[in-house]
Image (cartoon, rainbow, N blue to C red; front, side, top):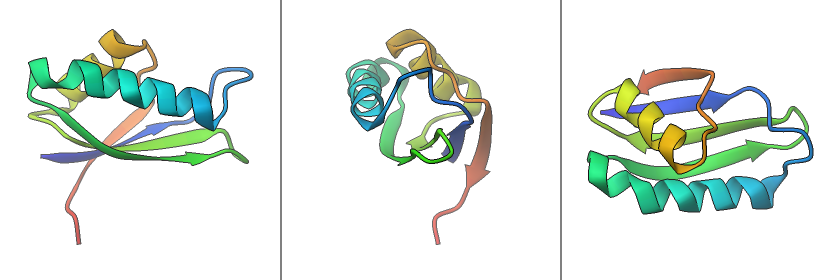
Amino acid sequence: MLFMDVHNHLPEGAGPQDVAEAHAADLRTQEQYGVRYLNYWVDERDGKVFCLVDAPDAETAHRVHREAHGLVADEIYPVVQG
């Protein structure tokens, strides 16, 4: 299933490079859970991050974030690619 997760607030002082490093950590962790983090977007102005992930369920997607870098999403939505 595809999910879009939303991180509503970047940690203090974090920027696009920090998000890239967190995404790389997701990629190193994801395989053991049958998850694929496909892409991410950073809204620097509003301090938000959006991640597109293929995962068995939302909790497993959260688990990868939690184990990879500890920055879990505030919201996660099932989505269908159009």
